[in-house]
Length: 535
Image 1 (spheres, rainbow, N blue to C red):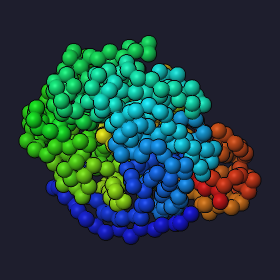
Image 2: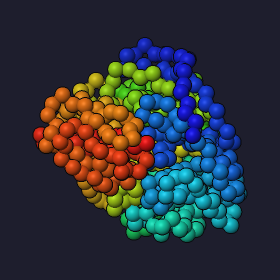
Image 3: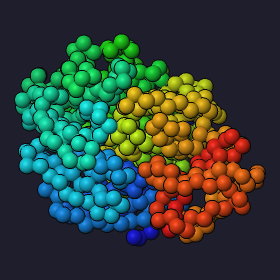
Image 4: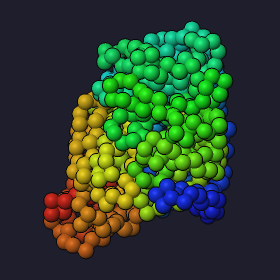
């Protein structure tokens, strides 16, 4: 493994608005793969890594706690198909290491990680699939992650997981137009009924082929196209859409992007909360934007608590909170998104270049989801954050935009709010977890059906661990009294592997295997969790 440290060079700082300020610095990294379009945690430590793939190699830049990266290259059996059209990541087997889906022009290849993430097994089916957007999602809500792939020239395909990573090929039932035109699948619970639905962004061709679709989940394993009733049956050549709650009213809105202006431009659609959408494009900023894009996604880049929109055209639309957006130029055009230095500001990665967000004074929180009854990644979970700013919602998704794979960690900016009143997590299983007054400016591991690790009172936020990484002994730095407190160590799968009463502000970890762990401390009724690495 090669350790890589970056020097950063400032590129750009723009806008006159304090809360809307967004700027980036850049650094190139030596990717070797033909496809460098993926940014996701690959080793179960919930830090965003960078992935570059070729036919016989998976190159991973593992993020370290200190902001550096450790590069490794894993040789694989030649992939039958490469991600020439899209890539997705998720844990099909539940072993704590994400697998990869390559969406190729003639078929689909899965790279399945072994138990420690050091090797991958290539699995490709015989079916012809002209792949477009691909996703990992629990389609039948049985607790196992499935795979979905848009088909360009035929009905869409999906792969049902038996829970052991064995996938059964299916075609039809969720986007059946005979000649395809299925380009961008976006899985979202648009009507807040607890069942995950899917918006299908279409391509060109005859009117029926290029009309966008909205598939409502009927809750019984079937889906019905309700785009006409919802007001989303546009003829615009779309390719992808950005879906998020742009006004923080608890309902998922949508930017229906235009990859061609032949049939109309971008459309900003407000979710009315009754299963329908209203066109609010006029005056939004998208009505005068003349740049087309095949990539559309939404993230809060300036941590002001409102979801911004970006795609191609070297632009980010900064959300003003009232369905108007301010166009800001950025040095990237379509990219994978993640926090690559763990500082609470979202960065991007594209074609061998990391663009680091320089951040601002706004506060934030990141939730890492771990399913128990639901799939291990928690994909499909709805997370709600309540603060003085209002209510924010996010869905955990694998595969947004057209081809990139971005972080599975769920990020919230909260502006100048100094506390979060409550977080609610609605898991695909139906389980609901609630946490009151969590610490801000921190990342937390939420385990389905249990307390959220790290939901601590501010008075114990000064705890630190050293040395970290460590070989034998983990020392706890805390000004208060720790003796008699309970310390519990969890592995990356959320399993409690050791618990003890602290006697001298240190814990012997000599017998732990090398890897990433989480230490949870309960002190005088309060709780905090810190990540550490055993060498």
